[in-house]
Picture: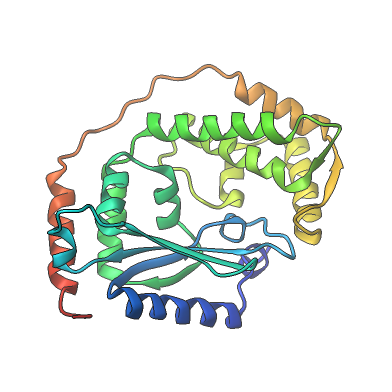
Length: 266
């Protein structure tokens, strides 16, 4: 399937998002370093009525860091049922990167990028790789899969989309356990961890149903997928290790970005 079919994004919506990001910069006096799509459109299994989940990283001015009261480090703009825009301040972002936050790592791997300061984003991705923790990522994805399985896939009839909210994190766990490095964001890439043709055919069929139905579409349980999910949830935990990088790398990056962008929106 072509990229545009897996990750649908119209020119009109891209323009709307870019205009909203520019408005946020003006109103909050910040600089957006990076903005991407973070939801089902980026994962590659959007429905016809899936919304747009825009996430961004922004830089504050130097005076923001020297206040007695701790300032808010998130900008949120839930605009309507179609578009949701929110971002994290850079110091918050780097604190989460130090902890190898999988959500942030997915943002940096998104196939749908709205805004990108090339050099700054490249360094941010390098830092993400340096501070990546396989144990932390595995625990995050396995916990997500368990929670979604218990919450959404127990009835005789289940929503199509909820299968992917369990399968995607489980495939990320397989990716980690197979020693492939950081899990990619896109569902199609994660399927490289599966070599069972019957299971892959089942997933392809479900993908077609999901993409051609609306977000609330239901269907009967799928025994082959349930069996795979149960087996994956019970697999033993392998021994994983991580490297511990010096936080000074993150401090240096933060200072450089604040200095570089301090005068842009003064």
